[in-house]
Length: 593
Ligand code: ADA
Figure 1 (cartoon, rainbow, N blue to C red):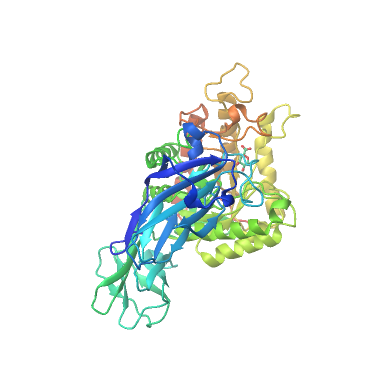
Figure 2: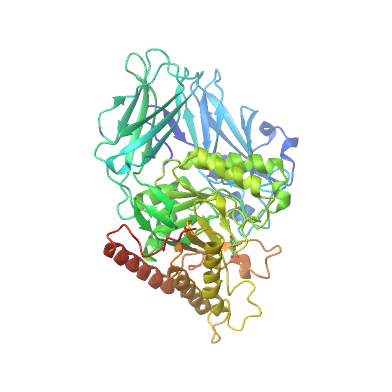
């Protein structure tokens, strides 16, 4: 959950803003306050998902008024602005951002007046120099606009304020032990006479022990009446942190929600709270034809209800940082999430761009910071399907893994690879994720393409063991085939619902019966828009039609096939676990590397 506050004033800026779509102009050739914004646009929304600008690319301007008490600093918290954006307050450029899905924040310096003008330049044109993290060859449509909520934080005129609160369950999470890290912003640390209080749930607040002047607090604490978080019982706790002045008045506060749980990768398996874990789920794009990437919370909740009905406990948030509302729902409903940074089959020339490396790191940091306290997020990923069969990606991958581990050592790090048998960097990750499409891509010469699925998966698992990765858990990060909703044909050939259903049935069977498989994320939950350019031949309707549901969430024939496979697997895992006393799984078989 984004932080919540009782003392600090935090305003959601959701609503109608003044707006202008300018098309193909160079945003740097205009002073933002000179642009007349004669229309209104809803924030958050994607302007090019709505009828007037559907499918258009170009620059747009959003403008609104901020109400900031004179002399107070403020902070703007942007959930996501896509693709490129530049933020101005009172005509002064304060920040630029070039990762369309990553959260970021902008500090607004104090001013003597109350009314301030916020102008956001947005540009959804592809430009390898300016927005190297985005490209038109991706297999999902990238929209423009202020895609997620914007919040305005009013900060205390005289610091310090609470910059962040991180709660990490320790190895003694079941007894309620957590590690707390609070960072202060503003003038540095607490002034003489100020103190920091910590309050779990409805327990009385306690004083944190720290020296005045220290600009951070770090310590372990015990959650009173602790309850463990799990998919079956997703209990959440709350920590509220406040700064009090010497008269006992609160000058700032910040509350976060967290869960007591522990995720581990060891002995070739995944373990949640000390029990073997099998992941069953889907890759999901945040997308709906009516709203583009700005789906209403109701749709997110409906999607999770469908996933639950399908027997899933897992969502891979492909291929970008997730909307905080979605993660909140996953926390509350008990779903496990792989969250990843934006990246889609980046090639060599992309890695050569210093701007790409800078933006990728920024986005990685923004993602980890925003999601730090979500118990649902168990895996942090980056760069889907880079050329990891090559050595040139190594320094970048080493650095990204190191950044993730430094920011958050409590979660597993991974990337999805399309080189199951020739990937050169699996040694870097905690969990191996292989994306495979046997019997779909490259099956032109096969007599019976569906017969390729099982042997291919077996070969991938065997090759991983043979290359010394037997000690690492493996999941199938993607597998799937297209099926066009409503398309039936006596031949049951490619693109029919029946072919897709059989494909997914065989894929689930082959993966979930394999002793080395810790889970599967099918490609994909629901159909989504992609680009015609270059891909139109493979992508009827210019949609990626590998959804088990179509874009309106109407189930295809594959729905029942997956549902049967997932529920049967859940029952099998449960039976095995209880016969093994929960501690020693028959699957996945731990193999020495
Ligand atoms: C890839 C990719 C997905 C999607 C899928 C497909 O491996 O990661 O985003 O494009 O294949 O449908 O081909």
